[in-house]
Image: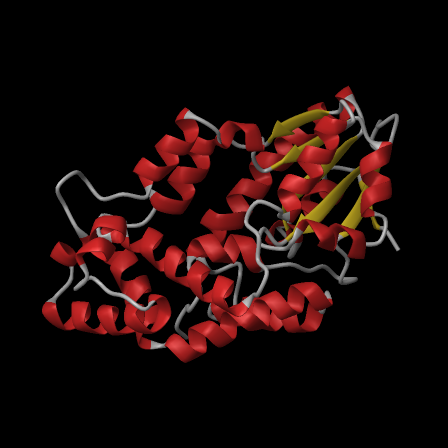
Length: 299
């Protein structure tokens, strides 16, 4: 089955657990105070935090908030490095990498999605040096924003928890560096693989858009059955057999769980991560349990 959602959006859109919960309490294994972990959809508005039962109470009860990244790290030089990671080498354009026939198909999709394509010099100047994976993500983001009136990229759920923590004088930290996430998102596939993934989206526009909508709808409905169906379809029916899933989630989950004990022992913490990382036998919830912690859904 074709994968219609890019690696970046896979990490944004998936959610779920055995109880269709987003918020979990972590206790036991020598912890003096309870910590929490919450699964997010990185494009969800900050206001959705109010819909997750117990989320704001958990935030108030902890001493620290730990995200995938410390959002402050995205400022300044790190943001410049992220932009550079999304780009092809100096002097190279994505139009140089595609066959004439592929470029015709891509331009048709871009015209429909953005209202302009690479025949427009301004478009080539703005997006022409994007890596295929970065262009695919940008196009899918454009589709999502067009379908989501009122979308505000400055008021999103992950930033909300960190901003509220800072207002209260709580510690804010991250599980990964910006550089590591750049490598996962833009440095782990060949250009040929990225082109193939981009053209799958271009050639299956309707199915791609439907897959994105289904994932977003499933998150906001907190519907575990629908979410599981979306995930298994995107990963060809098996998370365990998917190298893409291992790269985007499983390997990172293990790295995070190795760090979490020290963070929790320093003080009760609310971990805020993409909800994809909560699911499955190698999800953070299951891995914490294997380490001897009690992880209980907040009802």
